[in-house]
Image 1 (spheres, one colour):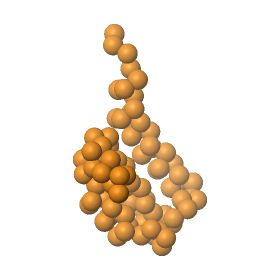
Image 2 (image 1 turned 60 degrees about the vertical axis):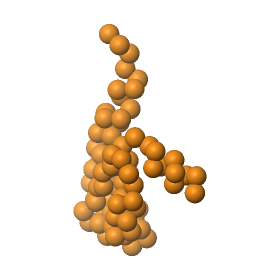
Image 3 (image 1 turned 135 degrees about the horizontal axis):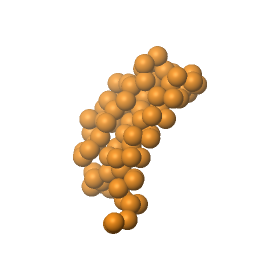
Image 4 (image 1 turned 90 degrees about the vertical axis):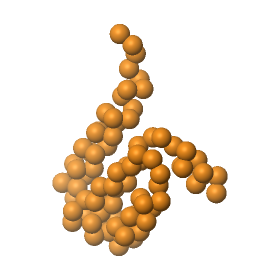
Length: 82
């Protein structure tokens, strides 16, 4: 329960990634989680991907998503004033 309360207070951008053809945690399940998360969030559905993201094109897409997330969320915190 404590984790749920902590997630509700987070102002950090939450990024969820799911494969379009994921049978273990289908898009519909991730959508429920996404809808319940407050604050800034984004949902990425990787077309044609399964749960394991083994296809190189899917991995490249995920890499780009993470790099953009880092640019938006992490980089401003580590920059020092000029």
